[in-house]
Image (cartoon, rainbow, N blue to C red; front, side, top):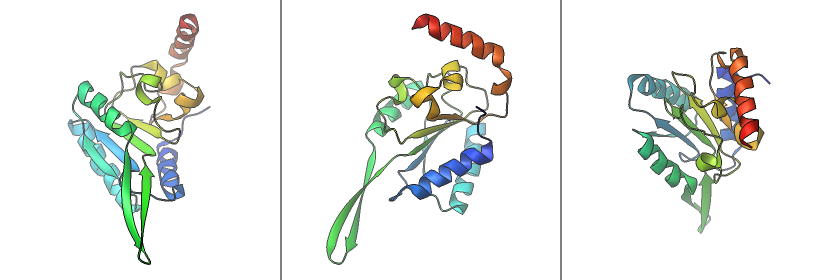
Length: 175
């Protein structure tokens, strides 16, 4: 199967946001590395999301340890919103459904249970990185966990058939 184009991946974020009955700034979270590429990408993505009326939150993350800490915080992340309706208070819980990693996550085995196994099945992780993911599991893994990881790619991954075959052989050997 072919990877979604940038436009398709962005459209999927919008669709998921609009399908969610109760959306908040906690529904779409963008984790940003502290480098020029990531900061510029965050600014552009934020402008696009604002134009499409998508609530989001940008969180700077510097380093692997801080990313692990953020993962642990996001694992049980819900926002509570209080709404007054005809003198009744309604508590609404919103869940994270889209996580965007800007210039981070390239070396991580993102589909593994260590990273996103305990997250809601509704969560989709989008990886936008100026270098291709170095961990081939993030690039080639299928199944439930692999389908939830979307690598924004310019087509370079499709040309990596030899690397994919080698990764598949190694994966089968380690099982």
